Image (cartoon, rainbow, N blue to C red; front, side):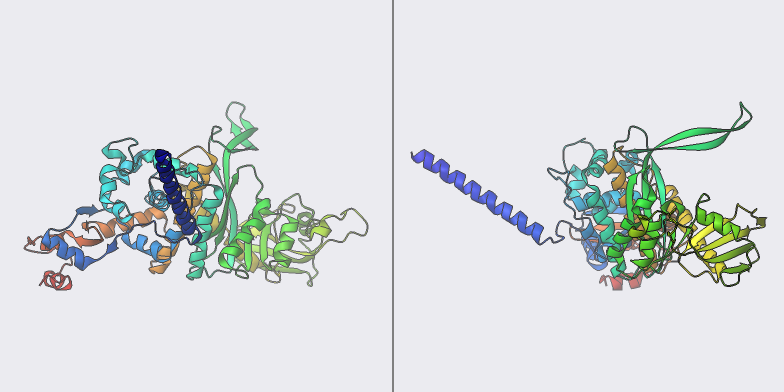
Length: 532
């Protein structure tokens, strides 16, 4: 009996302890604080004095991995808190989620295109790892026993890749949207004009969750010596983007299957953007033809009060009507302008786009005698860059803006090409967004969204520091950073780190060179660091 009482008492005590811990976890989730992250702080004077005393933990050369200013920047704006997600696919955690995600984002920023390169290029930079929050113990012995060996410290490369498969699209989109909200709050996004486009992320047929798109394409057949039509099938996903014009920030994005229509995602992207940057901020939307939909255009103008410009399709009745007015003379509805390389015609209020209207309008029969279309404005290009468009082949654009200055409409729409040239192309060539580390839908989404986060943060970082790098891609940014950190070392104590020129290090070690080849003032350095 006494033994049963003792056993019961032990069990009750264990149950109370477990209940207490569960309560603590619930309280932590309820009042979520960003406490999981351990970052060293930069203290040049303290670290210098500790080096002189020989009381420091580690010294590491500074390479491109030395990103202290950028890491300080994203920490200052609060982006690390956006990374503190639950990780729905994790039953147990050997490493904080935020640290895992930021490690992968630094992998993206460094342009590492293969997970096999991670141990050498990322995990080989001890200074960077410590700035990311890894302790000396973790760097030396790793987080767990998986893949024991020096090349698998502080964690196995597959652990980093597998992490992408553990997060739901909702969690990943929350990270991107949280980052956009921070940038907007800090004043990085002041644009009124926005660009919308989509780009394919091709994979293989074996990629889980991949969509399938088949298109007919004319190609030249050497065998038949003529153009032949082939059906080409592509597997993969599609990335929908809504980007600000001048700041180049992606304010909303969505990863879908490659065969999905863009027009189904116009309003969800706009709604998410409004939530991220605030209502009334988007005044003009420049849209790709794939997003063309009459109900959507009506809602943009009459519900969200957003003007738009979008190309019309060749087979539309409104396109044919506009082309029929190429030689029209009515000065009340037709406006002609030309510049050195461009001739355009603005046409007011065509009513032959049957689908342009609200939901009630959509239900009406366009062939009924009493049917009346809503007016929509048109700009038609008849000459461009030394080429006259033959009748029936003019380029036609629809817009909610006035068209008394049609050249101005075309000039505005030319800005939309920026999302193709300085975003889609840069994301693929410079940021390697199509280099997916794992063939699953979640991994594709995670890689794409985390890449967009770093793209946004890098653009904001450039603006904050006043660097005139808006026309440069990430590859130039890497080159600049390498030149700025060459011949530098980073020294660590348990709480702080410092950055020193190699010659400054020799001063601290009491073996200064006889002459200094760079901008190092020995006396000034000693005074600044309290060494006199």
